Image 1 (cartoon, helix red, strand yellow):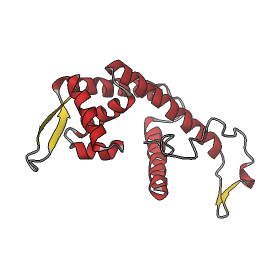
Image 2: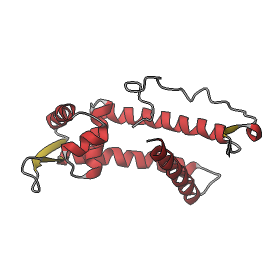
Image 3: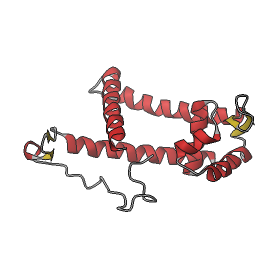
Image 4: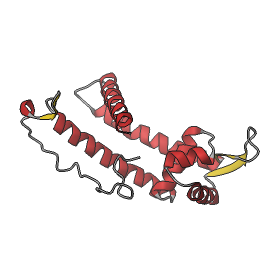
Amino acid sequence: MALLNPETDATGPVSLVALPRAVAVAASTVSHEHVIADGAAEFAAALHELDRQHRKLRTGFADHLGLTHNEYYAFMFVAEQGTTTPKELAATLRFTTGATTAMIDRLENVDLVHRMPNPDDRRSVLIEPTPHGQAQADWVINTFIRIVSDAVGSHDTLSPQQLIESVTHVTATLATATTEIA
């Protein structure tokens, strides 16, 4: 979920494309106690471009499956979880229960997921991928791994382990910041 949602954020989304490429880093500060690290603006721009290209790739996956963005996100969440409830799916997507029910109906109609009784709560159902849905999710995941494998294999500066450590570090930093913002 984006931190800036044009549907809910009154200020509207902020474009990171205009990030400065050359910044007088030593004199720049985010706050009185935090100096911007060397290369931070350039790295932020690179992360933004990575995010933009990843969104385009997910759009391609959604198009391939004949799904909207939201249907794709819902389907992949169900596939990644294996089994989930409509309530968990609604919370993840930040949808109402009614909108989630309609989305589950659409995903059932194209044989990607199905509902089954929840053995722990007779008033609830569980959602899981159908065999066809699991095959489609596997295709998405395997295709993504192949694409990333090409990127890792063709990188000539950092080892695969260094790439993993770098991405893991940035991911953890972003997760902490997201928690603090929320």
